[in-house]
Length: 92
Image (cartoon, rainbow, N blue to C red; front, side, top):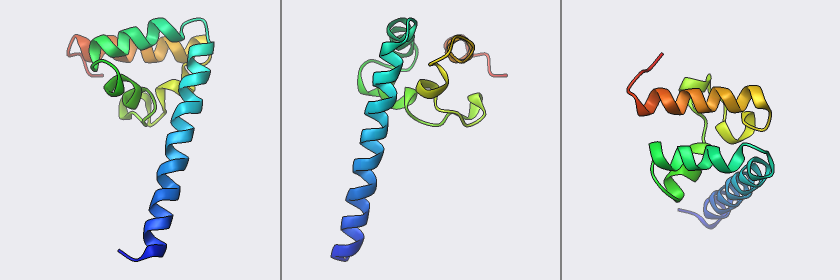
């Protein structure tokens, strides 16, 4: 891999990391954020697994990122419903 390609890759990884941190910070600031993270940890897995899931595009949410849409109550309910569906093996 050339130095330029490596620089581009590292830059992209830094950008993704910062975007994930920003998304999780916004989610925690919301009223439902902490309980949603607990549910994600229970269903998806603790720590990094839940954080990765919350900050990644999800096909069951029409490609939306859970931490982004969960900022408002309607989006939060969509994420909560989707996590409950995953937990119970119900995919709609």
